[in-house]
Image (cartoon, rainbow, N blue to C red; front, side):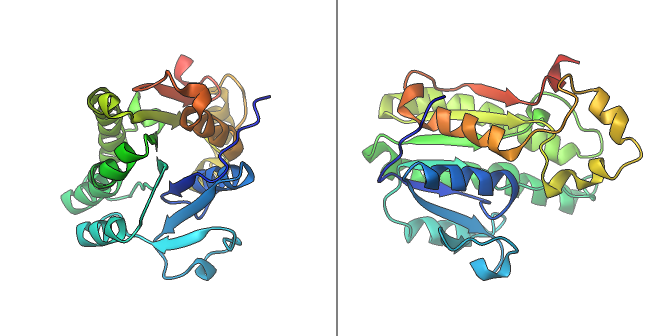
Length: 238
C-alpha cells in the first residue's frame, strides 16, 4: 500500500466540509499537509462534523466576486482539489440550469485560472472531482450532466496547455458513493435495482475516492496529466 507524504504542502479542497470532500481533506491531513477547506456556511462550527483540524473559508461558488476575493487573499498553494458541486431539482428551468453550471463548471474553471500563477510558481497540481456523469447522462439532471461533461473537457484542455508550466491537471469521476448526496438512492424502492447495475454490488466509500485523488496529486503520478480515473465499482461497464 502506498503511504503518501505531503508534509508541508498547502492543499485547498473546495467543498471539503462533508462527504467525499471531507474524506479527501482528512487523507491529506493524515499525510502531513496543511489543509484548507471551503464551504457555504458562515463558520466551520455550523457543520455537523468537527472541522477544527482544517483552515475553513466561506466560499459560495456561484458568486464571482466572492471567488475573486477568496483567491486574492489566499496566499501560496501547492495543490488545488476542485470538489465543490451541486445538482438541483429545477435544472429544466433556466435559472436552475444556469446556477448549476456556475457552481459546477464556471466557478471551478475560474478558480483554476485565478490560482494558475501561484501553481505555476510552485509547480503545483490540480485534481478535479467530476462524476460518472462526465461520461453518462442523468436524465433528471441535464445541467449537472452538462457541467460534468464540460469539466472533463476543461481538464483535458488545460492539462495540455499548462503542462508547459509544470502544472498537472487530472480528474476523478466517482459513481455511487455512500454520502448524504445519495441518501435518495439508499432510501429508494429501487435501491436493489440500482445496486444490481453496479458490478461491485455496493456503494463506494468516500475514502476510496480520496485515495485516487491523493495518488493523482502525488509525485508517484508525476507522469500523469489530462487523465480521468473512474471510481464507480464498475458502473460504467453496464
